[in-house]
Image (cartoon, rainbow, N blue to C red):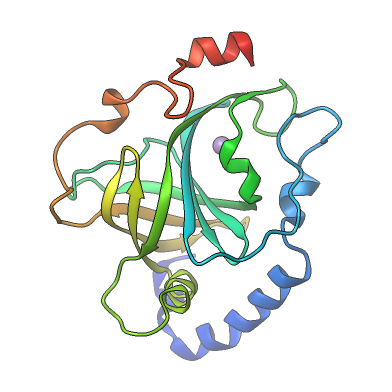
Length: 219
Ligand code: MN
């Protein structure tokens, strides 16, 4: 759908509560439906407690196409986006981010190989991890502001990762026929913005320092 479909605030207000009810009724339903946990070693996901410090991870994933999975904790799950080119710390480079199903928080620690033929089959590397907070300027409870930003499609956050830092935004641009939303991941101009190529600079696991090949060999 073109972005202008979202222009009507009245429409947005009526749509948002229905979406929240669905999500609350069956957290991680789509994630679980897509996977056979008797075959893959990915976590199944259990009810997670809410925390004030929100977790963040980026996993590099050599599936059918190489991409980076950006995951940001919100309301007990990891909101997730597949970013084909990975993040850029250069504010002039906008990176396409396709929203995918919520993942369990335990997924943050997953590194290894998803068996061929399973959903997302291929090798997963933990590329960056840390915590994040609300990154905008509006007053109020920071988690409320994050939630509102996510609903509105203007999700401002501040990363405190091991490799990535600073202020970023995800801007929703359109919804695909499938219902998947397309967003743009953009670095804000701040002291952490620069023109490095971080996906070239960091090619090993942030947790185990292993290369993709080593992960694929040892699992
Ligand atoms: Mn992925």
